[in-house]
Each structure stands twice: as C-alpha cells, then as structure tokens.
Length: 345
Image 1 (tube, rainbow, N blue to C red):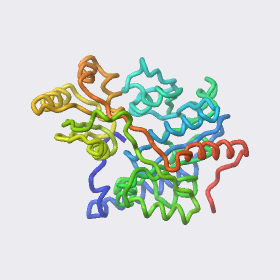
Image 2 (tube, rainbow, N blue to C red):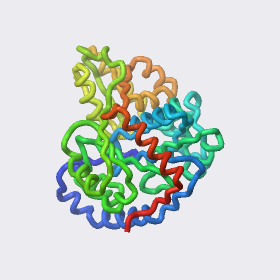
Image 3 (cartoon, helix red, strand yellow):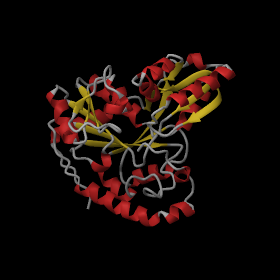
C-alpha cells in the first residue's frame, strides 16, 4: 500500500471512521472470505509467514531477516518470498540486488535479496517453487498472511507496541487488513515490536487464544556516529515517527523531519529541496535502509544524492535472544509433521 495512511486511523474512532463503516463492513466480509478460502498450496519446503494485522510500519522486514538468520544457523538454506511492490512482473522473478530496480521488484525485496535468495511473484505458490528449485529449503514469506496461496507451517504476526491496531477498524475506516476475529485462527505467534502500551489489548487477546507472545525491538547497528549530530531525517516508510525517535535515542538532534508515504518514489525536486535545506542548516542527511535502496537503484541524480546521505541501519533484537531459533524449530516441526492448517471451528 503506497498511499500515506490517514492519521485518523491511529486515533480514537471519529466521524470519519463512522462514515466509512459501511465500506469497511463490505471490505471485512471479503477479507474474511479470502482468509477462509485461501488455497494454501504445499510447496515442498517449510514456510514461515511474517505478517501484520494492519497495514504498514510494524517492523516486519527486520523480523523476517532475523528469522532467516536463525534458519541459516540451524543448517538451513533460507530464502525470501515476496509479492514485491508496484512491479509489473507477470512471472516469478529471482531478485538481483545489484541489477534490479525498485520500480521492477520493490524496495523491501531488494533489501532482503542482499541477505538471501529472494523471489517476487504475484503467484506466491509459483514463487515458492522457484525458490525450492534454486536450492532453498526454508522459506520466509514476507507478508501474504491474509491472502496466502501458499501453505505456511507457521504464521508470526508483528504488532507495533506504540501504535497497536490503531482505531481497531477495518480498511478503509482503519488500518486492519481483515476483521481481527477472522485472522486469529491462522496466527501461531505474536511479536510485539518496541515499547509502549498500544498493543496491550492484542497481547491479552493472544493470551486468551493461547498464542505465544515474543518481545522484540529495533536496535541501530553501528550508530555511535549519531551522538551530538544535528540531522535532517527523511523517511518514506509505514511509520516515519519510529525513525525519528530512534535517531533521538541515539543522541542525535533531529532538527528537520520529513515524512513521506510508504514506498515513496522520490522526485528530483524533492531531493534538491532536502539537500538545500540540509546545507542551509548545516545538517547531516539521514534516512533508512529501505529509502537508501530506492535512491541507489534510481537514476543518476538519485545515486549522486545518495552519496551525501548517511543510513540508519537497524536490526530486530529479541528478548529472549533465542526466540527466532524457537520459531524456526517450531516451523520445522510443523512441516515435518505435515500438519494441515485449518481454522478452529
């Protein structure tokens, strides 16, 4: 979803949510039906699905990377399966991190492809088979929980502790991708990302549903250079405020904040404005890894601008640290047992 999420989604339900309730009811019925009817085809390898209840900005990609690392440590050859974002590919495509563009495959697949084989495919079952054919024996499916054509052996849902489920309404009245009650039967575990109380309600629901809850947070990598720096921070992700808060926690002064929509395709004019504003204030330009991928895979002007920008790199850190290994082991156990996934009746 590339459009910017309306701010009212993350506030108490108001007249806008009520006005959109009829459309949300129709969307919710269709989404619940899609969950029930998803074919979930076996693909010949264990599949661990990392998803969200809501749209955007929960820390799903760092979690997927951590799980792939745990699978590799367990002796597996992991690979990532994604639908991509905004691309026009009609057939499954193995992502080339050095040669593919964001326009073709999306920013998150390019990030994932730097760590492990990654396939983007509209038909996820066909994409999974391509990964298996290329030697992958453990698939981490990035998103696709609500409409999976692939049988997943474990489904892990990431929830942001600061935003939770927003106003708790279904699209377009709120950020939920499907009614919560329709989603729970397919969830195996919850990951609460960060600190805060907004996710407390869904954590209690997980407890009532006998689903384990794992704690994680995004931790900057090699961010000591930020201490005492005055920066212009810009981000086109699902939750830019998380980036600004992380920079401040690292000791930086975020003098200028520029938030863009998730997956935002930067224009030359926007980059010129960012550069001029930073120069006028004597500020360091800082952005996310996902934004940097969009810059470095863009035209020459974007790549030249990227050389002036520092990257805030983060990774998911779990408490306890062995949680990813536990989830990988659970996935392998379910796959070996050949467990059929069916919703509770």
